[in-house]
Figure 1 (spheres, one colour):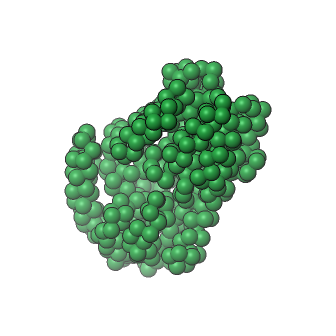
Figure 2: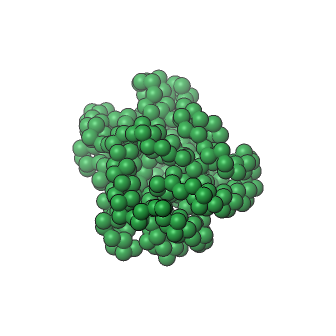
Figure 3: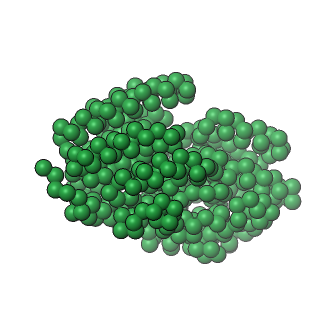
Length: 390
């Protein structure tokens, strides 16, 4: 299982653990996560010791990216040699970072594996580059066409792969994206807010996750400003990390709009052991995305049975039921988002009703054990269709 950049460490660790519980021998092809170097070990999996892994320890972001890029190329070459010497039953590719930037050598690597007779499974976490769907689209198509099977996390992604990229439907597997973290100790919202140093009695609206342009933080802040100006109460907490320039612009936007008294920012890496506190502290979870075909933050947040506000994206509608487990708004409709948040902040009965709806839907979703079983079925079918390895 390959993510040589360690871009999706939490997903990799949970899936790898699930497969091993099903007695699948998995070689964990990843370097350590640069933001939490011991994470994989604490999660019960070990990064491949044969990979170069110095770059992740460098603190300067620009220098770290340069060194990690050089290491990535070297590790990809070494892995290619290892595949030639000792061929695995399946090569499962989780993330290819350089396709985003218009390079094809990762596609050549997959073709090399196939030439060796190794079936290739590729998990499509986002069908295209988020924020710029046409960017290097032809390279995504080549990668998708090269793989023997594609795994995506929702029916909308499946339709996009079929309609926009011409991928045969029998080649696409829809396997859900499970929750990324365990729930942890049960705490009341007030207890969790106290531990986080937040006002205990204020109703808390939470945005949590990796911060990118398409996640809609500017839209959320515009709506929050409208709500506050209309007399709405509550506190908004934005927590997560991302590009330093984007984080700086969020801080500036909060100050420019005069929202310092009602918006708390934790724009930093949150260690895994602290993550449950943020969800437990929240009364409402908000997902103001402009686009996207999956969301680990949503699947994790649903475990906590909190009221949810989300934009009208197909992926969200696959997992949430409008009016029963979530309230939906159109991306960019600041008045509607402001009004929806105002309603939920002021109405504990409505928050409780939606939270119960979320809990009921979550109970029906697949566990990592079931996700692992579905992934194994994909492996078995791919191996049956592929030529017998010598």
